[in-house]
Image (cartoon, rainbow, N blue to C red):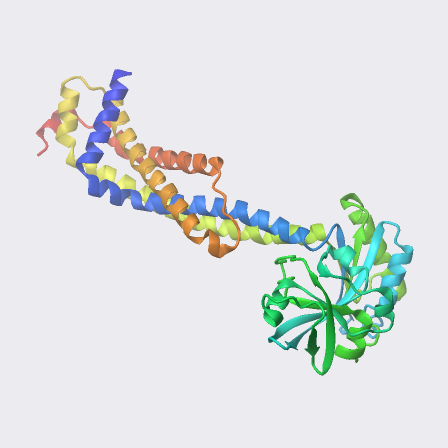
Length: 407
């Protein structure tokens, strides 16, 4: 125990004697550890944000998209049809037992104007079920009713970002907005849904789907861009997906083996896709951090080898007064570990500072976990042990007589 304490004291003394060199040696380790900690913190915060954004799409939602379908290089019969329609949504609503609600929507980006402002805003045609499936809540005013939907009334609900563009901080309910040449009366405002993985869900106005078809894009007939359905629960999502696909395959007369003109996906699949992309990015960033740590470790080894050469006579004196090879090896190993731990602590401090500086700009909190700190410090110590072993072994195996003769 006394020998270990002596070795540790001498290792610290050697570091302090060469402060600048010790600091410069630790830079590579600091950068690598900072990168590891930042990636871990970014990952924790980003995964939470991804979950939040996916949940903002609704509850156990099944998405049905139109897509081109080809067969043997030519258009298939399905692709020659009308794509997704409101009749498809009605069939799903009627026949799919694992589904609780079905809705449709179509959207176009248009220049929208009011008496106070204007901007490029998403104009969405929706039915009454859209609010239930997507979880949109009215902040003030009201939703459009069945009568307004059937008569294709020119009424609209406005989301927060669009409201800010068109009316600033003023109450828009009861006022008018213009889409192209058509005026719409604002009957309600929506609570914020925030950012989804695809877009700002608050930069839009909602109007009845019939009004959208007749006033905004009158060339699509009863076709819709997207059909959405809510499964009874997360456990029913797979069954709901199978039912929806089967119903549409029959309605679109798509034979077995033919490519459909639609694609069905679940909320859980979108989440897995997002997490897969993020995992790849995380691995790439950690690879860069690992290279930095490797370079830092090589730097530590080189400096330690220089230190062995510079202190050869000191090593000979210690051996002459009774120090064992194990004591010499322990001294240099402890010095190497101390260097990398110092770099690790500096890297954690650097990462914390960068997190505080950029967390606001990222829009979501980065979370520094105790596990990440422990891994960072453990990795630092392991690098010190690994890259310090050869210099320490070399010092321990010096011939005492030759070491004393060294100038």
